Image (cartoon, rainbow over all chains, first blue to last red; front, side, top):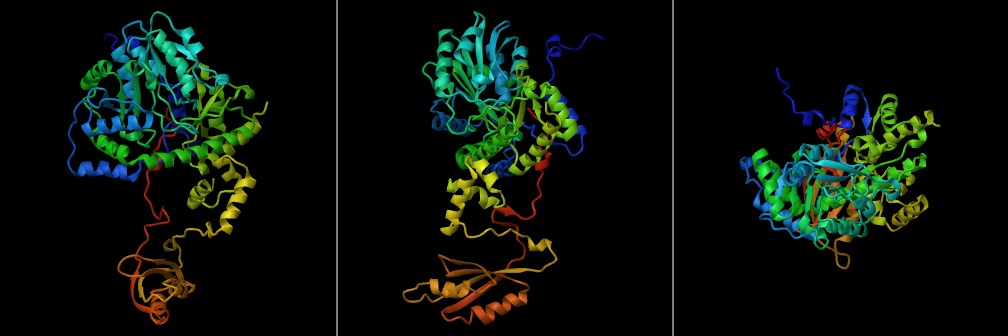
Length: 387
Length: 161
């Protein structure tokens, strides 16, 4: 038999998180600070709307780009939260989670050999999706001393004449870093100078603490060259509904929509009806969840620092990214030993890029009680491994 | 900060001062002072536990009583309400808008005990004109907490990107 596989796909490394998942699922009574999704249930009024749509028999495809009323609500939402003005007809389409939009944007914009600047540590799908779209990832290693922000100097240094796209993953998974208006200004300048495009993954945009998220698309001249990706998973605790969206210039969105049309057809109908309700009546849920995350964030960072970890204070998403270099172990070793000895799962920083070496991702999408239980295990662990 | 403390302890009043301080991002002394102030101002009026007596071997009966009263000159409903809420078996008393005046929620050991309270104590009170008693058959949710919830939240995977 001939080799049935594509060399391109074979060459892609499986996610480093997968390995941990496999060990954990073999283990009895393991606990975890390893998840990248909210612990809250989707608010009931949103679930109820989904149920109602099923009762009404709304079980058909929607149009490729999504329900008209959902696109209109997304347009209103982007306007009222971030001051962005997108035409629901042509500049917005609804996807199967933010992930589909990442993939779609890259495939719609890349030709073979185009370079994509990718700051890391960052979410696990960007790099493989770039490769699948025949692009060349150019990694920028974000630094703890810069609070894991992308600096304009770093960006400037990474640009070549092949650079086409910058991926801007803020608020960031796994570091929790955010980019302020001031930080983004410098980035926008470099992007405009070099005629680049931006894929801005703003899936955590509702989860910032102390300041509101700013989108790079809101800077002059940037809306025309930015694809804004957002969704319902993190802000409304709707991960399992698989619903996201992309906003951007019609020129690009129409091509992304073409891929979506042939590969996906349309996002799940039930989820779309539920999402309309989320955008219409869910602001208070978002605020309540944000407040709860903020309490856990403050609680956890104090506890982690009191134990002697050095950890920069993140103001976004729901992760801490503490440094573990003082224990003389690699991230992988630390996470694996912690799992075997204390049955506590965390994710090694290296799962999000090589420059995550020396760090762990600890999620605080857990109740204070769960966090306390996990902290006891970490405390016991570091007592045994003091250097 | 008071609002934030209230939001947290309204759901769980058992956090230590240390935990509260960490969650809010301040120090223990400040939290202790704020709580003391709110206790003094009768903003925080108590810390009872929420108990589902149905899951114990002790019997408890809850009844909701609609009460119609004649308001008293100068005191309105307050004096009548006071005469009612001072009874130990009375859990809650609310002044209502609408077709009747007071909602009285009482808890007793048996239906008999509740019935005796209504017929002997409550309806014989001066200014109480009529009562209608409804026994609670099952409590599903109280104070925002579901009493017996079937929940599959544990199905969240342990490690995800």
